Amino acid sequence: MVKFSKFDTVVIGFAFAAILLIPVNDAFADTPTLTITNLVHYNCDSPAPPNQNQNWCNGTDHYRIDVDGSTTGLAPSQPLSFKITDSNGNTVRDYSSFYGTAGGVPGFGYEGPVFYDSTFTEQYNGSFTVTICAPEFDVCDSESFTIN
Image 1 (tube, rainbow, N blue to C red):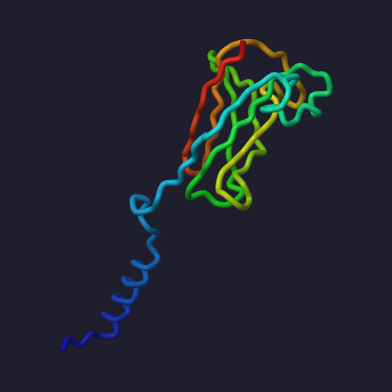
Image 2: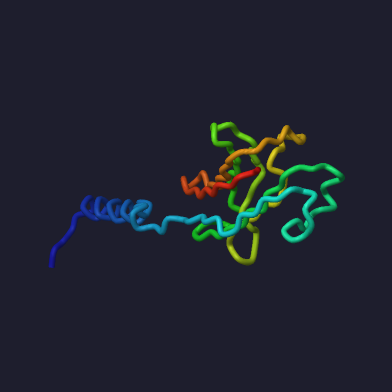
């Protein structure tokens, strides 16, 4: 039987504690996912479906977007980023108060105006991309759509 000195015992104890306190390597952790599963855009004056919020239009003829998706490995109410850009890279909509679902099926959903920045902005035809990200994990998904 091997006898350890008091010094050896302390060193071995510190080494064991350090091993227990080392965070798990990210290579062993599951990478969260975020996937857009449904994307619909429409003129606000169009009848339901898809426009379930026609009463919010108040006679304005603006385009709206409804985007839904699923997530795995994210916390409830996970902060997400939501951005719509045009084909020239101009930001059309940057929604900063966007979160994943708080309960139920993990995911996210947004229904609102495309051309909006604290007030309705000028609309125009073209190709657009909506990108939703979980910045904390550097995980994103994007979908393109066209307004004619």
